[in-house]
Image 1 (cartoon, rainbow over the protein chains, first blue to last red):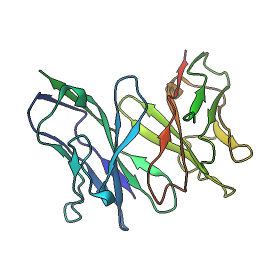
Image 2: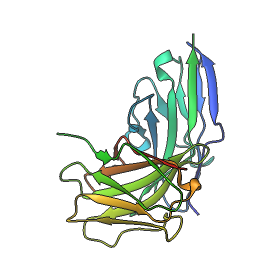
Image 3: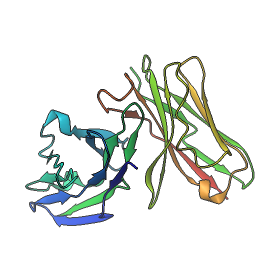
Image 4: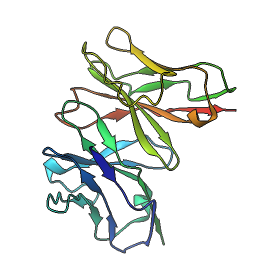
Length: 108
Length: 116
């Protein structure tokens, strides 16, 4: 069965420290993976998608098919990065399925 | 134009009552999704509508939950005989395609349901 696992409920780092939010998936086909973010009192929104190989707000994520992972990384965390982050997997022909989310807290 | 609109934003009801939650997607978006967001459970997929195709109801947790989409636009999620475990934020999202091409969903602000 398709599944997205985010092992950390909460990740707390200091400003300027590197950040890595973990995501592992199980999927039998060719996966399409995404990271969504929800800032305080804002709507859930797309942060980035693996197929675009883009960097958004300093965040990058690389799909590792061997390890079935799609970890989100940023070299230097900022306080404004504090939010809830969801990893998501696109199932062919149907809906996105999401992990349980990781709360990132960046303090000064 | 306006984003995805959901109503009510907050709903408090008594156990056993029925509730209806409404979603107005972005105009022209053919795909519409309902998710449930609760502490510790993340975002649970409930149901997915794509154009005139039969909806994917595989995420509905019980037969107390149902949803319809009229005229390919507005959708209503109905929960019958509510239980306390139904308390959550119900999120609606729409997408300009089936979602399989871009994976970008546009979310509403959610309807927070509290069952006493």
